Image (cartoon, rainbow, N blue to C red; front, side):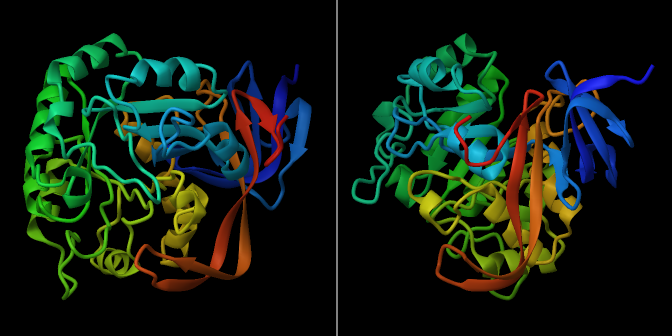
Length: 381
């Protein structure tokens, strides 16, 4: 007897780097999970996605989705419906003092997955707007390590790591101290760190030398200063040493942390990021980051092939947060998938210092599957 599934996406180019799949075929979902991959599958709901790309539900490793609870938060469900992202990793929007609100009022009711890093600062990122910008790491009185550890343990079913922001912008004159304090918590809790680095101090070297295997350096292809590459195109020694040690390099585009010149130099030297992420928030959503698909499109136009770009936005970020069940279309995995169009044309992309790249390709959302159910793009139901 031929199985009939709840939903079948028929005839798309299925790209699942976790399983080495890149071919035109059908994919089926049943009971909220991926059910089967193969030709001629039958389903109660069958959608023709011929000419489109079907990949595991996209995972954005650096977002800020504490909507309504922080000044930088954007709405995850809206972004899911417009950008085909099914898992949002929140990069420390909430700290120990307001994490319970983030969980109850945003994460638990949200129909898409939110996996949070807990900020080491008590109030998280609490003053972030075009007119008010206060670095939460500048005041060490806000860093209570016992409270951070307590909240991380109380919410151990949800918290995927500890977030800290260092640099002149986020930390003022506190230098490297917030990172050292966050590492104390992370080591005690058995969790990875995600470290933001903006302008010095501290230096890139000071940060990278402290990071452990499995820790994440976000904003990894930032422009000068604190760029990972010298002006002559050579990658800095501490960057190479950190990769060899197992540090994870994440793009975290945002409004100030991604440069085309840095990226070209890193790619030319054979140094790919481990993960592509948007750092989407209330400012960067207006440009130049916009969303994960725009950030992925920039890498396509800079020479990466489609399976590589998909890998850096699916299975790699899943592994970075210790989740082997997502970022894949393996039967039995959660039933999430992104359906994309690869448009051809002339597209103007910008980085954070105003350089423009005219590209010939752009990834666009065409549909999304969440828990085995089809969602139309940019609709409320």
